[in-house]
Length: 338
Image (cartoon, rainbow, N blue to C red; front, side):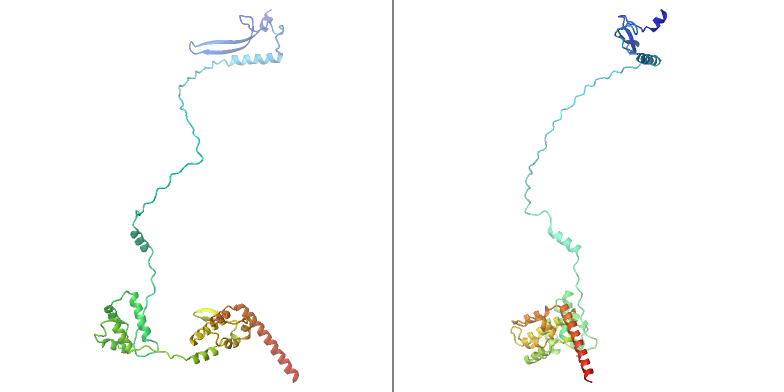
């Protein structure tokens, strides 16, 4: 009987078997209540509602043992309710297209001073200083290294660069450009007050003592002869020379000089002597020129100038090879005749 009582599980007042024991702590009175969960079982293995297997009974018993060993009251905390008011946010959709206000009209009068701006710009960007003209010392004794007219022009350019414009200032510095104890200095010191009154009077007196040299003008016949004598040789074709301090082909320099001579002759607007001059050109140049009627000398000179130098070089090399072959044939023929 006692063994049977040991096997029986504890029961509640209603007669149900207790299956689990859970302690609950009452913090107000600090008492421990026991909550039980029961099953309507009269005895293990005797009731028709008991479906617990031996394995489940062992697991329940181990669970009870663990609960009894770790029967530590767990406090239940009460969470205070906070009375918070969340404001209502209204979200408005962003418009796809927004209207912009028109720009206000600009005032007619600017709110800045242009004079100060240009003054500042001129200070930040200095002016380009041109090389100063330095006249050579003038002696006036007829030496070949000086020209009285060129000296007077150089003196005027130097005075303009140095902003010396008054007659008095120019006459004062004029003596500094004369050779010491020279014929020009003696003339300047003996110059009368009348000739020193104005710059025009001074220049007139200077040109009376050293008059400008007049060049010997050529006649039309002389220019025509010079035009015919100006020739381009075969050996000069395909080579380069210097014209106006620039490197160019020899036929280009020849055309420029020919046009100048035609202008001096006074025949540039006509076709006079064009075919005579063309006939004196090397055969290589004549082969590349078109057989057409030139209306004036400018057109003829342009046709010669537009010839490609590389093409003339090829023609010249071909001509040289043909000349060498011809000379070799002549040599062989002379040897055979001997």
